[in-house]
Image (tube, rainbow, N blue to C red; front, side):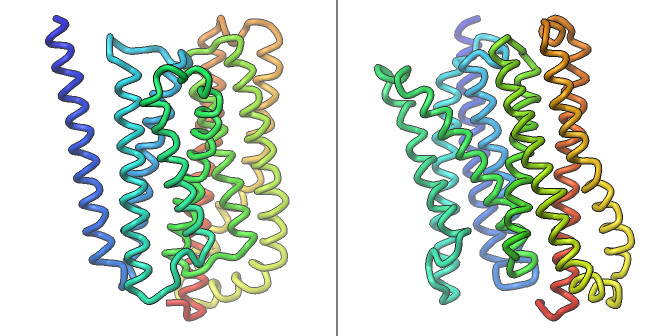
Length: 329
């Protein structure tokens, strides 16, 4: 039985390495074939999705390793976490170097944008995060730093994906749009944090979930009602809306933007509701003992997370349409 289990684990690990190698090859191929055309965003999308999947796997395995999530079977969680961390680091280094080569081949200055410097930061942090996998004697001493850098790395990856896709589609991004996207990415990670804690809730985990809900509420309020609201009143209504409405795709304003406006109104309110639910239900041991209450928290967090994703997709589509009509492509 043990031998069979070991073989299963080995097969899964080998499959993970093969899948990552194929994803890298596919990413490079798609990027190479499309980087000069109107579909150059495809390479960014493939690389972004693959990197996001890997960092999510790293976080999930890290949460399992620390006991925040239940272990399934007798899998060696540390070995799995080590392998996925190495895969993520290799993927980040590979895509970053390939991105530098694309930039150099187009005659552009290397690391001339914030996007490039964030990519370099991600590579450095990803390499640093692999160190605890090999320093076994002093791993406990650097665990806290390892966790902080891991969460910071996840935030940067999400921000990099959002900026990269929007930049590939639109060509340039305004400062307020960058702030809006960044705040949305941070709120999305905080909501994911709440969901993870609710899966195997402990008294300490409840405190972490509350903190995550505070972060999500703050960045959703500032990102939607303040930053996005200011941008809508000062830029969109006066500059972008006339271009979109008078162009061949007026439905982007009438349908997509109208929907985004409703999400803009309800998302911060939903985040505040989630925060208050965690505060009120966490006064006693209701959440720890009541699985239905935890499922309700998860449902609200997922709904808010879906709203953020809708906001990002719709926002990118609106920016793309405005840039297309103004002669950006």
